[in-house]
Amino acid sequence: MNNKFKKIILKKNKQKILCLTSYSKNIAEILDRFVDIILVGDSLGSVLYNYNSTRKVSLRNMIEHSKSVRMGIRKSLMVVDMPFQTYRTKNEALSNAKKLMKITKCDAVKLEGGKKIINIVDYLIKNKIPVMGHIGILPQSVKGKFRFKGKNKSDKKKLISDAKLLEERGVFSIVLECIESSTSMAITKSLKIPTIGIGSSSNCDGQVLVTDDMIGLNPNSFRFVKKYGNVKKHIESSVKKFRSDVLKKRFPAKKYSFVN
Ligand code: KIV
Image 1: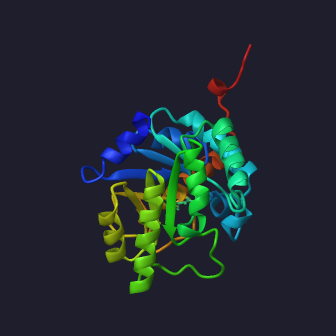
Image 2: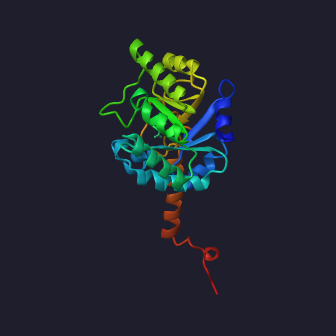
Image 3: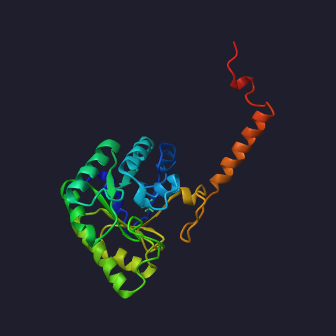
């Protein structure tokens, strides 16, 4: 296990782990100074491509965005989501994970699911592919409305058992998506590896959000997302000034022109 992974694991019980998504170099460059993990999430399907489901995201989409993100990262751990139907069998998963790692030079891949995909996770790890787990709401499996998880006893038991199984097989961390607060606490307490929560309360070892949501670039809003900025407003304001300058012939002035 290399130092980047060790650092993440050692943070458990000491300092919260920070993770945000990026789909491009410029955003990754900003995040890299402040977070531990940069995730190229398949949320890019809804955020950038307006897909109604992450199921429509292709391996090609993930590879192209990850190549861009890679250029912006110097120190953070880079994790890339394996998209829907790219890990249906052990061989398919290994071949696609190897391709992702080789082309994008990411540090790890993330797969959605617990017991159902445990043999795939096991196979990847045995073949030296570092894996991040993801349980709770699994957007690649959801048809219809997203409902939070872990609200009853049996659901809680299943989530804890999935998390433990993933840990046993060697994932270095697990994303908990939209899991009820006491269940997140129980999962986090039962593991040696860190949990990274999204909509899963402060009981997790770290937090992840979709950057476009939290900076106010993506117009969608979710109950669990705190908006830390209004980047859309900043862009609008710059574009308005540009428009006005061009229409009034203030731009480009001489200093922006090439004059012999
Ligand atoms: O796709 C994504 O961005 C994710 C995060 C929401 C954890 O999986």
